[in-house]
Length: 135
Image (cartoon, rainbow, N blue to C red; front, side, top):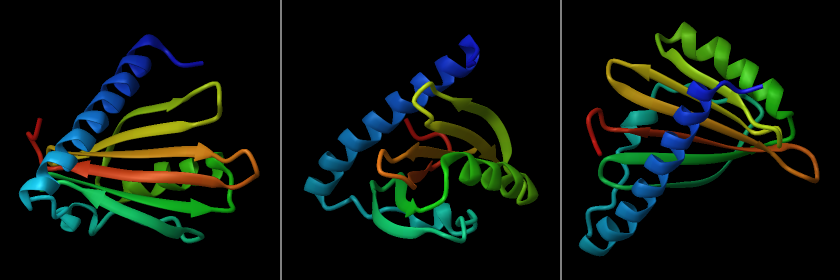
């Protein structure tokens, strides 16, 4: 069960991602939408993943993946490996539909791992980060 703090953090994350998506459209029109891929350079990738898309703005980047593994398996792997690389987990919330959102931070840089089970089996997940202090 999710406590109210985790719920508010999850809602805030969704709002920030929506804002980043809107900014991405505006930045793309201005020719400034090149994602800063370096933000995710040292974020570990779950070994049994297939990349699907990469998008972002000049201040944020989102990489999407698919895996045949369960959402719980992927989440457990990220919980263990993010800590090993110095990321502090700030929030770890599981929703009634089985989706899991992990919010971590390192040196002021936020990182979201959003994991969603697929109805036909397997999982989609997104890894998102932004420049420290970007709104």
